[in-house]
Length: 498
Image (spheres, one colour):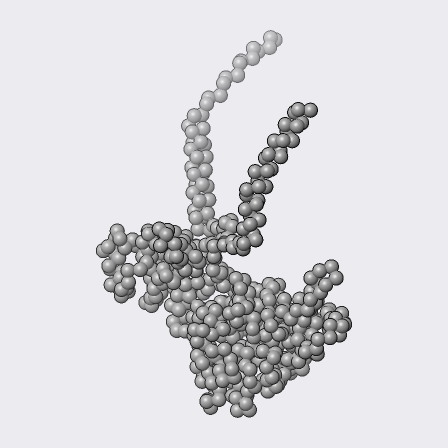
């Protein structure tokens, strides 16, 4: 039987409809994924500031404050394009809007072009100035921030035909301070104890920088003379004693103890050169002993030369809410500083907790015979005691819960054995000392959410050259810079010749 002839295989039909449907489905899926990715990226994104000076990056304190805002904050911007800081303010407000996560609405109104809208808002907020400004509105309360409050303008060059120059932009300080005023409603009061030769609160005081720094956080100072009172006013929850030169009387000390027993809050900056045995005794009752010594260190100034200094380089410890965000940050404590001996075991039965806040760097020693000029004795004491950790600041809390998440009424105190480190002549461009005082005050006021690194004021970098430096600079430009290519040319010519 013959084998059947094999039929050739028919080509399969191209199912164009199925292919077209698959392509369409893939396109729709790609578009859907692209839209989903863009939607997620629009709502959940991260910004990085890679600029050299991070001019518009918000500070840690401002970011923490913005998280506490419950309602909507509306900011209306009335800035003329001719204002020198218009661009800076717009960029800064963009950072506020991003950090606020939907809590901040911003409206830009050009008062020169949109006259009707400008008049409407001016009438609503009773604005009566032609200066560029911001109007902040929060839950029916409003506050204005003028351009002059956000920058220091240098107009010294206008006589030479130059325009005004921004010498320091401080927009974040002004805007955050205004926001705090609106959100908290009323200012917190800090009682400033006077009557013992403390620095005054006047404009020519030695603590004007500190006073302004604290007042920018919605806090006002109120002078408090204990000698004239029967009791510390109940509206004062926190008091500041700044370097008293005279000791408290028995009556004043009783007021202080009564205030402490009623969950009072105290910030105490001591001057080691002042004799205040009664005030030191009050601290000793709380487990903090103020030692009669001075911190010193020998610094090498040459191959075989050393110099003795009493300015203390110290760092903040991170074990307390006061200094948690300043952990390991260094600060310089000018003038005399004594050591503190902390005795937490002695006062633990009274439900008192003690945390060290500031510790001197390694190499410092506590000298009890601090008035001597015997260098041999001082060097011997330095070798014997230079490895001992020395505490110069501490926090005390009585009646607190063991669980930090549980907030209860408690008495709080911060003590530092140096009162000169935040005076105007000691505060430099680095503001670690001011951040520490701010953190202490906010902890005492139970405003832990505002403890952080405050915004710094960016300033232009300025080089100043004395006469010798100018002469050397002239030699470099006129002689050495032209001489370099001449030498190179001579070397190349000589090599080609030989």
